[in-house]
Length: 199
Figure 1 (cartoon, rainbow, N blue to C red):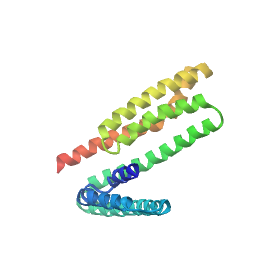
Figure 2: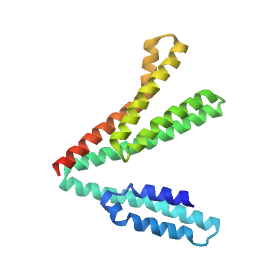
Figure 3: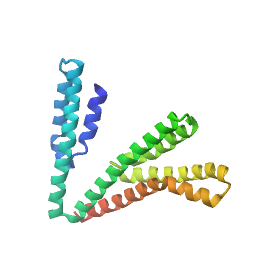
Figure 4: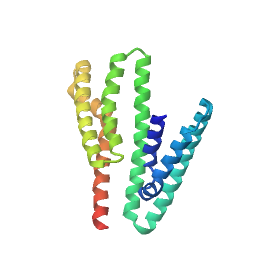
């Protein structure tokens, strides 16, 4: 149950900062109290499913309200918020895709490629997820991982294709999302700093 509580506390940070600061600790405490009550396994599961589904809906509602307020008071901050939202949606899609791809490779018995995909994409994904909170650090990890993955992929493709240009193009195509995420994080970091200096 401790892991579930920690996950819930982590997801609470997806609320707008002011809302999280005001209500985050209280919401985490109420959720922990609910899980500490004597319940059957099915009752625990029911509480967890209900709370997590409510959490998702409530986060979207609060973020939308916050975005609408920012559009009126600070359009540049609203633009950064919208970009940040798009970034997060794409990171989730990216994570799901590579989990599916790795699983597919393992299912086909291609353990080496499956393992390589899991290892390198996990490192890249760590940078992407760190970027949710710490944009500069996430950008550095993501871009470094994308460059490393490009070089490794290019070497692997060149061993098969014996054509450095085709290998480089194939490797860049494979790692393009990593570079896109890294650049997006750099832009988000710059724009966020500009907004803070303007305030």
